[in-house]
Length: 324
Image (cartoon, rainbow, N blue to C red; front, side, top):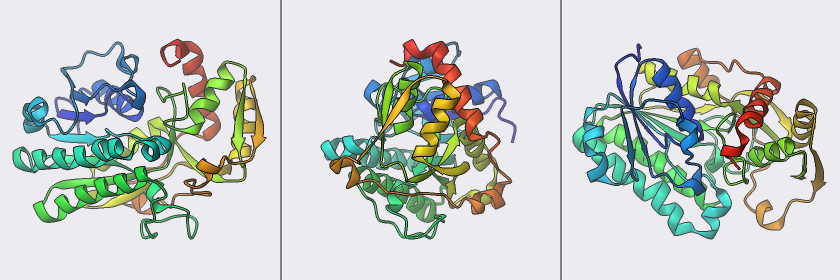
């Protein structure tokens, strides 16, 4: 697919993954409309799109029909990457998470069904709702057991997307993401990912906490995630399907902390017991089996974990003031 001249919407385009996707699309010649509520506490940051000339930026919730009606009607491809990602916030404010992750997506899908049901739609889902894995690596047939409110609502949102694909013929693909990292991620705290706050401490030459340390996780560099989103949209065979997206080979959190300190050349960490409130909703080890997506699209990650961490640290050492 050539993206030049295509009318594309990215919801959550001021956020971490969305902004990296927007930048790639603009570079490819697409006419990109960003829809974003601009909630800083959930990752929206104007600096993420600094220097870009966007055809349209709509500051609105994806459930706000009047504000986004015209843009939805003319779109050829929609990347729905809006959402609240903090697991602890979802436990503290479950009704707010319900509104942002479930109700807004249902309103959005109803609008798309009415005005542009044949648009190509890529939904950013999550591996979180698998819960503590019963086996590794985790494939798409793994049982669903959300460990927190956020996981329940994200699973409902994915289920709405796939129901609309089956019943209404919408051309939808859902991508279940693992730990995505890279430039433009939130680093001021751990609302988006624990790795963000670790990176902050490294560039500030201070110490961070590693809870437990033995948990194994896999990570996806954000440019590889953008590759996956684009190739999913370009591949007709992915329509109506759900896929895991993995990335770098897994390692323990302790190994990751040691690697980050080595690459960064600053900072340090303390190994701590897992806080009780966090332990209740932690999933433990997780490794994605993404062989189905690789087979369907030919995608594979291009960025080694160490290289991705280096690029991320370089970005924040140059631009950290915009994220702290």
